[in-house]
Length: 77
Image 1 (cartoon, rainbow, N blue to C red):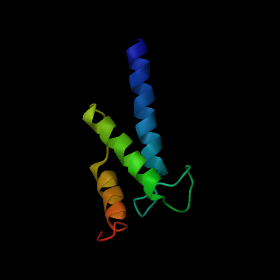
Image 2: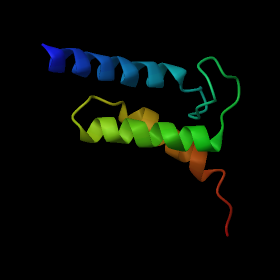
Image 3: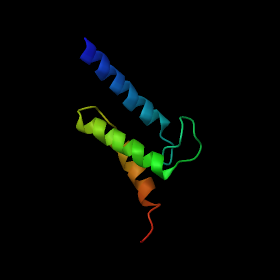
Image 4: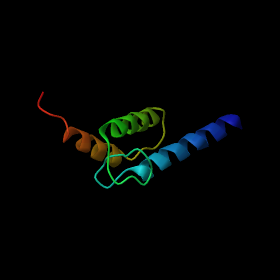
């Protein structure tokens, strides 16, 4: 029973993370943020990718959008 509760909690965490994603693909410092932050976006991508590797359903489009947002902010150097 305990492992089912942990799994449910992790699924809820994935869902909450995806709900916090901004329309441009980024993530801010808190749910409801109006502006994305590169460090927070990278941290959330890492968390979502870890969840995906652990077998949780993660929207690949959400990962793609976050990756595109990050890529747009990387300079040539």
